[in-house]
Length: 314
Picture (cartoon, rainbow, N blue to C red):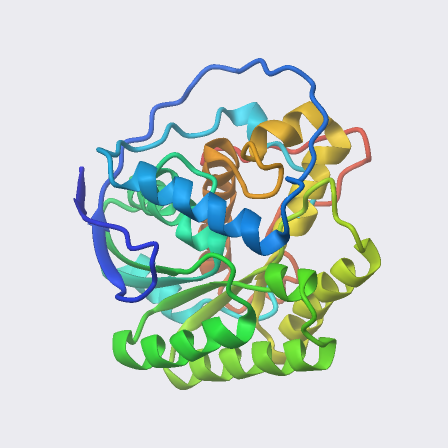
């Protein structure tokens, strides 16, 4: 049962206390079609996607189905454990309330999904509470489509000070890579966000950029992906590599990747959000349980190019 509502406008942070029962759906069949971005400009595409999402969000929403196991196969480690999730681990050990701030741009807002209940923050709550029945997840969703890091940073600094979350998940970097933001500027902004979370005594996971098949300047885009990784290593901040995860889906099958994307070929679909929530939840649990063990990566071990590793038990 979902109590409260999820804000995708980001003006006021909505408080969501939810327990979501996510049924497993059967394997799906989709036709192979070329995935292309709309002919409109990037900003126009974002606005149209947000308008469509807001129209759906005003209707009655129901929890989205979880992705079937085979849909979440991955050949990549997806969470770099550069530091500890100390506060999250403490809540997992003792029970009680775990406060999470999910902040970012269109992915956090759920653009591309059928409803806020289908977006990754709501689904992550259901996954974690299913595995941790003594823990109540207090999820605050703060997403605004089209934002760059400088815009999100202003909200992040304010909201971590006000909410005092145990865990912050900062989805960052896609719009910076696709616009004219400088690389040094971007690096500085991410470091400032990390400092704000640290000052608020919160654990932090950086959620890096999405992969999509029609990246126009792949070299620039991947430099921004690498910047998130580099800053995570430098500051001992955990990084969930969505880019590596989604690229792995595409390497396995263009049809599988297409199913994880919405109709615009850019934002993630209900299935993509369900799968990411499944894997992110599993990795958070693993990271919280690692303690002081010097583990570089909490994800699955490196596999051969032809072998996929599932997310067992989550």
